[in-house]
Every structure is written in structure tokens, then in C-alpha cells.
Image: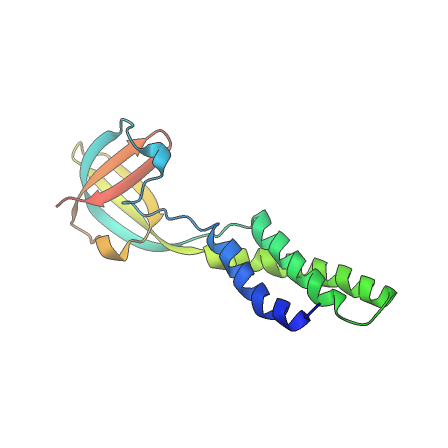
Length: 156
């Protein structure tokens, strides 16, 4: 078994696994299950904007991928029982680091919008920042609500 080959492939495998966990939560992005569903529509004006951090997820993919990589790396250390112990320790350390990496990779910049509805009522919505559809104070917006999901889009 050529360990150099594994060392070259493992980071790419880890990155591919984590990229599958990332989701897009911009106001203009819909999941396929949201298509063809009725949404409640409100209109208003952005009165305040504040940038926030959308915390990343710590899922099983990062933990499992990190543990696998750490276990393989640890198993190449020493021989006999020492190799077994190193594989276990490498797996545990890799799992912790993989979980942290997943959280870091899935953390996104969000924006908290305070909106004055045409009815005079104020609401606040947080969603991922969309650089292609940036909002500013004073922009007229459409607020779309479907179940527990609300998104804000600028009026064209």
C-alpha cells in the first residue's frame, strides 16, 4: 500500500465531502421542495440593515471524514500495537478537527433587515448576504413567507 498516494487524495476527498454539506440560503435561492407552493406576499421598505454571522453546522460528514483521514494517518506511525494506538488517537483527533473544519466552511455572512411594512408594522428577517442582490436602507422590498421560511427580495 502506497501511503503517499493516500496523502495526496485525502485532502481532496475531505473537501469534496464537506462541499456537499454546504447549502445556499440567499433570498433568491429555493430548494426543489419549495417550488409550486403558495407564499404569502408583503411589501415594505428597508429601514435598517446589520451584518451578522450565520453559524456553520457541525455535522457527521466533517467528523467522519476527519476521523478516517486521522485514522489512516495514525496507522502509518510505528508498528504493531503502537500503530493501532496511533490510528485510534489519529482518528479521534481527526474527527474533532474535521468537525471544526466543517463548521468553519459552512459559516456564512448574513444580513439582518428591519423592514417597515406598508401596513406600518415592523418586522425583522435574517438571511444570507447575496452580493448579486444587495439591499440598502430605503429599498422597496417584497417579503415572501412560506411556512416557517421568509425571504426578502428587492423590488425591480
